[in-house]
Length: 65
Image (cartoon, rainbow, N blue to C red):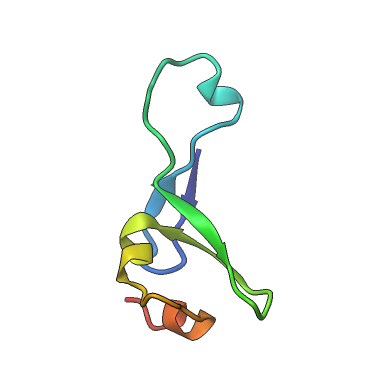
């Protein structure tokens, strides 16, 4: 299963789900959802998360390439 990163647009593997029950593939999730104080949420890959400042806002996510 994969989900699109809202920062760079790349497809990101998301671990879990019924498909992972039958495999011993140790590949994990390549990103996570960040929730901000204004109740906005963004799914970002780890590379985009690393590119954010220490205390990011939704505007910082919008500024990602």
